[in-house]
Image 1 (cartoon, rainbow, N blue to C red):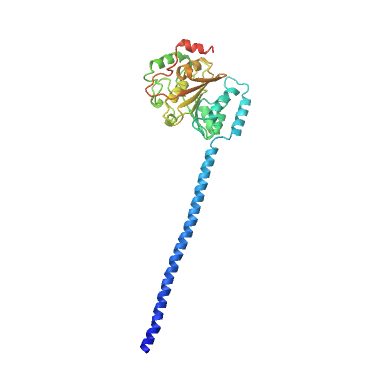
Image 2 (cartoon, rainbow, N blue to C red):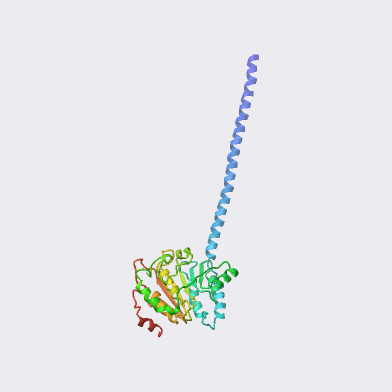
Length: 315
């Protein structure tokens, strides 16, 4: 009986220790999964919050990438007011508004790739109106470029040595016609062009951009030895026709002082009278379409004869 009693006392003791052990493991198991659940809950919530904030920020950035219309209109208003009496080197109020309207409804919304030949009174205005867009300025004066970069380091500008002269206008036109299937093709990579009218020594990345808007307001062209805008207009025409598809199929090209001989003749030759959509004061607005690389005519639907060139001056 003693032995049996001893056995009865020992059995509960053994079961008691085993039950405690199982409870401890069960408690640890439940605690682990509780912790894992709470940790997952918090990290998921933080992830959702972060994602929401990122999405909201991205949406806000997209909506704010275009200059607010009241600010856009105010800048244009004060610029137009200060230019109400336009001089030879300034755009009139109507001319400013013509360019600004295209920038406002840029083909590659919300901002434009805007190439400007010439540093002028309107340089800061163009950079501001094309808010968060790509605006690049090209000018013949390294001095003016340096001064601009010192005062406004955020502006992208390059100086360029033009090799043409106003007095060479008709020789260059004849040369371009002779080389239209070779060096002076309407569709080509200007970086490798040997055409005398091609601007090919800008930084390489300039030629990789699909420009939406191009303004030719430089270089100087008011005396015989001045470089003239033959190269700028030819280059604008080739850039517009040689787009690779990153932007719209059309490029808006503006030529200032189109009433002058060089600007009128070269615009007719390389931008084409049929592409002229608007004329405000001395500003011509052309819309030039992308062309097939096997095209060898700048103006397939119009004549470039001397008579058609001179008749434009009488319009």
